[in-house]
Amino acid sequence: RAKTLGGNRSERYDESLEVQLMRRSMLTAELPGADRRGELDLLYQPIVAVGDRRPVAVEALLRWRHPQLGTVNPEEFVPIAEAAGLIDEIGGWVLHQACRRVATWRADDRPVQVAVNLSAVQLREPDFVAQVAAVLDAYEVPPEALIVEAGEADVVADVPAAVRTLGGLRELGVRVALDDFGTGHSALTYLRRLPVDILKADRALIAEPVSPGAPAAPLAEIVVRLGERLGMSVVAEGVETAEQVAALAAAGCGYAQGYLFGRPMPVEHVEAFFDLHSDGVPRVIGPSTVE
Ligand code: C2E
Ligand code: MG
Ligand code: MG
Ligand code: MG
Image 1 (cartoon, rainbow, N blue to C red):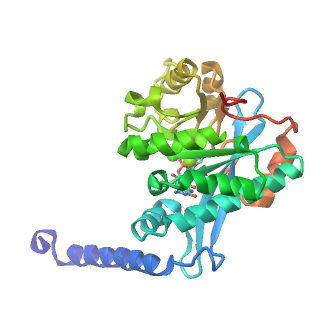
Image 2 (image 1 turned 30 degrees about the horizontal axis):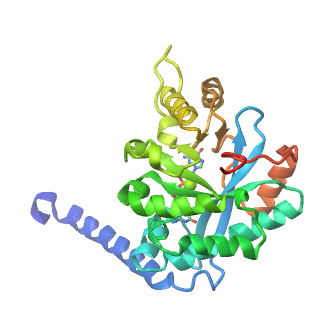
């Protein structure tokens, strides 16, 4: 293979592979204790109501501030944490931080919900529901102030575990969101029996190319109709343009999130965003009462 590629190309390929492997082993070696060393950070991205563009919730998005490598994104280090058996600890840190934060916001008259992303490992954890109950209790967070987001692919990979964990969380009164919905992992088959309150329509559904004269975001519209039929709220992810918002509004989509409204931002910025744009009226995504 080296011969057909030619010596130089092959060498360069080996070098970059080596760099990748070194980076991965460095991250694997240094991830333990990152939470205790203060290297983990949560950014918060607003989720707004499409009707009046007011913020209703914020999604907590994890970053690792590595002392040498700079910011490492969750798509790179969450799989490493899962493989190394560290995701329970890191996920616990995220849950504590997010709940502590939402408790202070609500005490300061910022009636916001916080959304936390779950790993596939947490979904399978038998005592995860009890962990969440304990954290809500510790910070005196009302359960409807917490949204848990489970990825469609993770749910489909183990439907019984997802039903058990998400069902238990929902019984607590926590809101459950199906993340990255519509990315081809076919939760559609299971949707009627999944304990889900919120469909998060993946960015790919919103950003699909539109031919001239064709209706914008037809796939988003289908997700909205589906949500209506199943009694689920819909959040459109990755909204970047005014045209997309107009199409979402026309489709009757309840909520949206994306760079157009606000990027994932540090605590002080998201507080300022909230103070600027909220009317202070408490609202929740998902049913306001749980049967
Ligand atoms: P996600 O939950 O689907 O989060 C949305 C991702 O899209 C975020 O990437 C966000 O920064 C990005 N995004 C938001 N608006 C826009 C937009 O308008 N345009 C574009 N191009 N991108 C947008 P991020 O923060 O890099 O997170 C990536 C994924 O990592 C998340 O996808 C989630 O699956 C996972 N993740 C993040 N935080 C955690 C965590 O605390 N625990 C676990 N287990 N996974 C996490
Ligand atoms: Mg998410
Ligand atoms: Mg998502
Ligand atoms: Mg996504």
